[in-house]
Image (cartoon, rainbow, N blue to C red; front, side):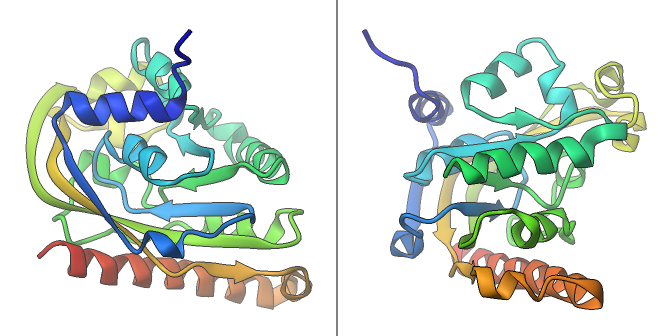
Length: 240
């Protein structure tokens, strides 16, 4: 009996939209070490693209409303994504879930731009400022040796379709300010895209001892800037 794994479902989604997808620098993907995958985010296709492109089991964190919305909920579950909790316990639940996955040697995928680029799409070669939660996770997780892998998804051809009213999503997440907006939710579909793998940022047990006091904030900022810089450069390279 055929097992519909997250990878097969991701491949099916990519095939359904007739996406021509290529990859570069796959030799940079770490082997035999827990990894946090960081990527830019402009389309609902980004999660299937990453799941298809990364050879390890990849569990991607997604917005709270995606775990509440009928139809969408079933798709994210089939892809192995884990929706974030409601606002008042989101951070704690995220760290607990991500730590559990990493300690069991699964990989965690994150989109540190948050919701904004899904509502206000950026140009293919641009990204928004990254939130630093992933960086604190990388330094705080109880995994001794860890890699943080920046990945750029560069769109070479795309169409932006209007879909449902943005305010409809408010019923599934009352605390998301972006869902107060008027207008239709954009649905960005890539026709041709390229996945470019950045150079991993490695953190070992000795380095983790430096994560304390004022230096903790500096280390998180350094890692955030590193990933944002890597992805920015890769997007400029890929969006030719």
